[in-house]
Image 1 (tube, one colour):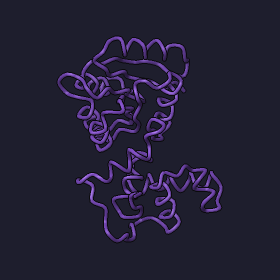
Image 2: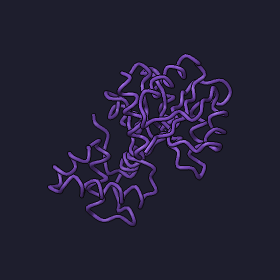
Image 3: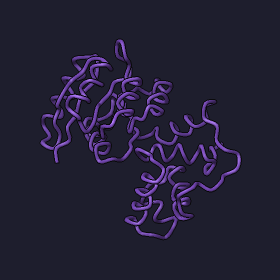
Length: 220
């Protein structure tokens, strides 16, 4: 299945570079380009891409607001945000807006392609080296107030609660399987059910839920 991609960046050279890169891979296809957030939102309505590779800093409507509007719509499009290591405040905003991934502009080209595929497959991805730091910093911010005492979450089983706790600690499906002495397939099924039951778009939102509900405490 071909992953249909929209490129949203106000720098023509960045869009051109990504377009040329993607053109060499038959499983990926650029179906539109935008130089503003407003154009990106309209393109999603027009062509319903699988993934939008979204720059944050763009004239007019920025990538965060564009992401929020896209995620508020009925489409199944996912957003992969372009960022740099010194833009954490922007990343936090994009995380709240519903972005499924964060990609650093100086990542290796193969890693950029892998990020597009991961997000298109329905998973969440944050650039290597920043995942746990980013989420820990995010949930420590004043606007995120975790519950002091964990309490039952309606609609999930005790086993699913255990899995949610481990997801909140940044554990992969393989690590969850090892911790709970279950198969990787079973761990993946539990995560899938949690996504459905909690109305979460992806794994990042499960991590945030685990922190906000007091299942996981911040590392000190």
